[in-house]
Length: 178
Image (cartoon, rainbow, N blue to C red; front, side, top):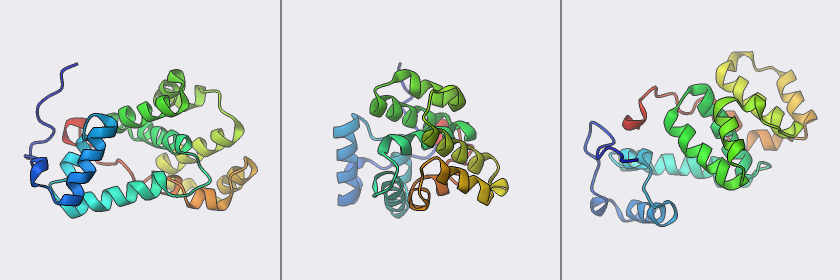
């Protein structure tokens, strides 16, 4: 499907004008994904914010954790679904489909994670992420206890995207603006 030529009301910098480290990041994206995600292109308007965003993403999604890369992407999909962020649903939904090898799982998580056949650990993880995103003030020790009962350790919870899930993707911007 043809995509618009623009991603923002603001002009994004030409990749050749970026600092060396950011140009290298864009080259890696192009090599691995075939594109530079619009969120990175837009953040390139403020190079230090782009660096900060990439550092946070790498810490959440790539740093050592008790959650696998697939589980982290599953959390991202559920959070994106709760926040109704089309851009993130597309990106993280595709990651779940690719990492799991299960196209239906990706779609179920995008639409309603509760219909997916999940083991108790992943069900508890996604229930917690949903609640933390939609009702953060309602999180109580019982919620953390449920995670532990499902086999997630405190360090799994603390070193994963789950604690930060409720604060992500709350821009309300249409995908073209991200």
